[in-house]
Length: 393
Image 1 (cartoon, rainbow, N blue to C red):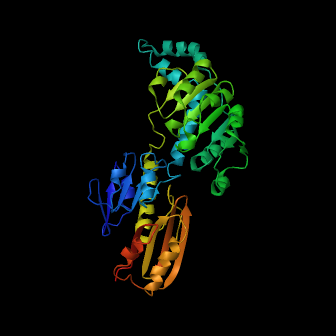
Image 2: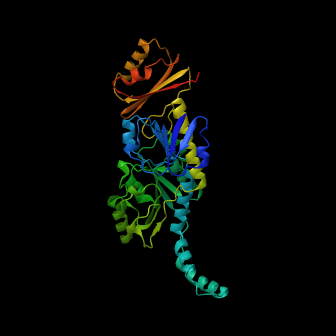
Image 3: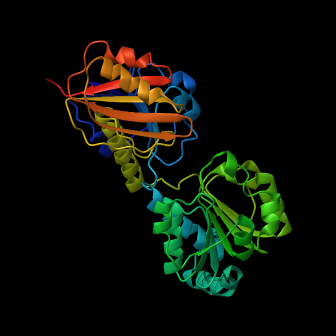
């Protein structure tokens, strides 16, 4: 029986993925095997000795102590792409709100409470509507920074809306490159994108290299009057630099899902209450994806969409599987195999991959695990933790 601690309100469709005869789920549970979380802030104290994995129902993992998890051999899963469509649709909303006089127009109409004659109201609006004239986004250039699951969908959407699209991603993977439409012009660096774009949409993770990516220098590089849309993470944009850009007119408008006190009350700022992934469909997709990844890891040791461990999948072959993580240093795997050889344990299949300072291994053996095997493997220098995943007799 696996014990899953569920923090925040997890979609019922995600929870239904766990077979009740094999899993116990609760928001408060002692010695959990795994944690399924959305926005709850975890600390290193939550990484208890029995914890095997953490799954974040969402893309960002800044609420999870990833480095501490890696040190303890605990994979952290996320759900890239599960909320991509929801964010893409909100980016489109932001593009339209910032290009047309929609928000000020709505606000103006709602002030006309002293007019009770429909004809008079209609006549007044005909006179005043020119105040809210905007521009169409068709033919404008959208710069997309970050071409992953969300960014690639945004580029496709913009092209369908008749926009020109330029993109920049310093860490573009081969898989992501296949998703990006070939009509997107790839920029060599961020300043070249900023100089070209009428609208700029950010879709990079909140990591050390992206902190204050949009700073004073970036604002200077922008096309005069450009619109910046940030539906990624708050830390990517330096607030002081953005305020200065807005006040000088260098930045035409700022549309963001991350309000800040310094941005309130500005006519050229549109603030939303962090609703990028707040749709029923996105929450269900994230929960289902997180749950299925946890189940495959707990029951088979396979890893997919981990932010701190390598991707690794091995079909089950044999009555028992050894899953272990280790420091990414020489001789560890060889010493583990020597322990198995000394016990006359035959290896049927195995797979080993590394990522930065950690390595992860799956080894299928031909027999049931003898008593004391896990303890013996844990004592191998460099091994972080060991799990035996064996078929029930």
